[in-house]
Image (cartoon, rainbow, N blue to C red; front, side, top):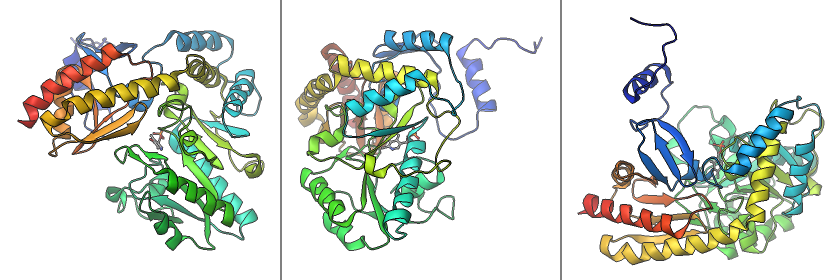
Length: 404
Ligand SMILES: *Cc1c(COP(=O)(O)O)cnc(C)c1O
């Protein structure tokens, strides 16, 4: 007997339902996640997974932390949304927290990284039209990643995306990362901004050189071009500082944040120096911009990251992970162990990333392969040595099995 609203219970039924009702956009493993706590996730069969992706560098405080539950329930019972046309208290407190702890003066809030980057792109074009005689081109980097909207896909430097969804939004020039001469050769009177990740995340955790970033800053100072840091992945403690630009001894003009800023709640921010406070009414907005619930959650998350000194902890545990990876590297021929804080990757001796990721999942460990020969780790900032040891043990077992 079929009941109209029969509850789906078993994992098999859930997977069949997923096959029928979810628009295909990606291949997912045959498991359904059910609940989480701290470093762990559990699926609907009760199997436990040690999470070294953390919702894609998102759940910086781990799964379902008390501070988020408290903010969600307190603000949720007070005011969820009053419309973007009114001020609200958590919005003002959150903006103050971010500007007090960064080099920036003003914040625009949105819900996703791509949306924050769209705001940065629009601001750069506005700046070009107002102050740089109509300059509109934005220089971005090969293998950089900026999101999946049409403009941010055009900004992204992914080879595979080049022919997708034509015609592309125009006005982007891609140059090799970490190469100051490449930028010098394309910069022109049409250029209004340079936009890049200080560490390319999706590109495989490629850390930029200090000399390169300093030279970029100097070039932008001399030409008046806007320097935009996409810190969607590197921001909020991930790399061992609250923001990755702090590693380089410079200040960008504009920065975007998402991922870790909401601890898992959809939230993003565009931060700017006062000089770039040039939007006019109606230039930028969004139904969910600065909505009170998200603001209260983001405020609680970033406050916790600062109060608990999690950037410092990320630096320490990141070093520990890299040291333990170095210990096992000779045995499995792992190369190029790299990263900053808790954004770490290494190269495999063969294109077996996909196989290693799925075998680790079978063994209860969640990792990511941004490219077929690269494994990336981005655990919650609360990761402890015992979690790292558990990760190394499963990873070693899987590497032994898959690589031999
Ligand atoms: C994830 C990511 C984005 C896109 O963020 P969404 O929230 O998925 O839109 C943009 N830039 C970088 C560097 C990212 O890592």
